[in-house]
Length: 97
Image (cartoon, rainbow, N blue to C red; front, side, top):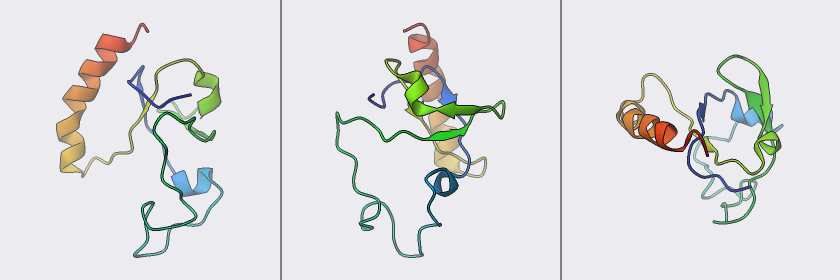
């Protein structure tokens, strides 16, 4: 399944816990940590389960064949607030696909 345009944005909490990993040590990130290999465009995303905005578990594989956008954001994040109109517009455009 490709991570693509939005059917809806999922509010996802606790990525490290969902992956069964401890928090990434200070000074490391997905680009320099061998435990987090860089994603390959066009390859399937790893399957995982997180909670949606209603608090229900949702497994990525349950959305197979549907466009999915996973957006990690915070209320205190200025760039996150700026991108919300574009995400909303994409949702309205692609929600029936």
